Image (cartoon, rainbow, N blue to C red):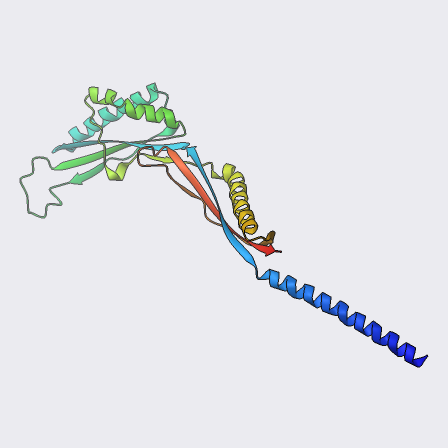
Length: 236
């Protein structure tokens, strides 16, 4: 009877050791799987129209009498404001900056006292508007001001027309979802090619959103871009 009990006890111990062995193997396999990962990148890009434009209208006057220069600037501003308002630009979208006066004689340091014109004055009227297409149309029509004898200065790096897109928050969720889906597709393909299955996400990193001109010729069209990096576990 005692021998039989010993045999049963030994059998139970053996079974227990076998079960423990299988459990340990499964745990080791799962632990090994934790080291098998794939990191993929998900990209999403969208083209959007700018919804804000800043247009500096620059005129310059030169002369020796500040009073006459001031009168010319006032006449130019009156014509510019009329041109803008007649074409649908409101007062709230217009700002007239104080003239910038450069005294060439004062800055010549005695090297050239025979200047034809002493004063050079820069005058800027700034249009800031959400009516992007309307302003673009007016930029093309600014020759109407030239016909009135108002010379608009173009190409000044300090006074460039700029376009912005301010609706990023409205498209962020959709773009993040698309970037994440693109990353998942790439990870699925990698897992399939390596005869594995895709597991849970280990880590995920969302890059910064960037907004750039699509190209140098159409600054009113922007490219919005975001990249996500996701690391997945791989399983057999």
